[in-house]
Structures are given as structure tokens and as C-alpha cells.
Length: 169
Image 1 (spheres, rainbow, N blue to C red):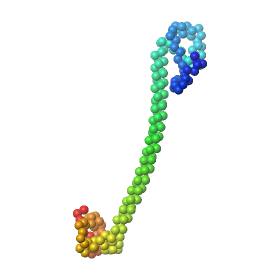
Image 2 (image 1 turned 135 degrees about the vertical axis):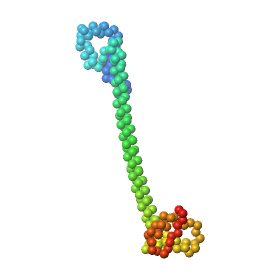
Image 3 (image 1 turned 30 degrees about the vertical axis):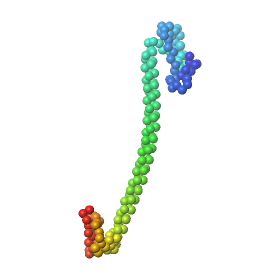
Image 4 (image 1 turned 120 degrees about the vertical axis):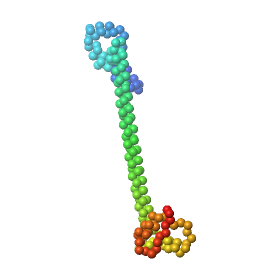
């Protein structure tokens, strides 16, 4: 029975042992009493002798071995998936860092552009100041400077005669 290598059949994932069921337990007991090495020889050939009294316990052991193998396989799959998740997380972080850099650059560009509107030695030399002068010349307008920009211009150029008119914004 050991020479047949039943445990290696096809693609079955089975234990390395084959069970040999001895239905007539007293005959096995008599044989083991006469020749105790029978059990060890069978084990050496990867054959386990079982009887009606050991059958249920043997099946429980097999079930536990299979459960253990399934858990081990599940752990391997969990680790594989965790590795994939970690790699995706790192890609996400790298994307977020790139977005942060672009947002910072956009913020810097925004502040530089807004400051260009306010650059000058006097309020009247700035783009905002020049446009306010045009408005003061009775240009037909329906809008006025946002309050925060008008206040900023008044703070930057406190002694200038040109006052920025601001709306309720």
C-alpha cells in the first residue's frame, strides 16, 4: 500500500500519509502482539493503521490539519493583499504630495499675481490704483473693489490722496 503513493495522486493536496482501515480490530491487535514492528514499518512507508475505535479521532485530526493548511493559505493571501494595498497606499501618498506641491505653486502664483496688481511706489502707480483713478473720472461702473483689497490698498499706501472705494463684498 505504501509503494502505491496514493498521497501523490494528481493535483490533490493531501497529507503525506495513507490510512489503512482495519475493520476487524481484534485481528490487528493479535498481529501487533505477535509482531510489534508492523506498526512502525507501516509508518515508515507512510501508512497509518486505523481501526473502528480510532477512526473518529483520526478524522478529527485530519480535519484540523486541513483547517490549519487553509489558515496558512489564507494568511499568505492576506499578506499578499496587504502588500498590494500598501503599494497602492504609497502611490496615493505620492499623488497627494504632488498635488500639494501643485497647490502650493498655484497659491504662490496667485499671491504673486495679486501683488502685481498692488505693486508701485504710490497707490496711483499700481494697476488697482490706476483703475480706481479711471473710476473716479466718472467711468460707468456697477461694481466696486472687494472690501479686503480696498483695505489692503489703504494700509499699503496710507498717505496717498487716492482712496479706494469698496463695496459690501
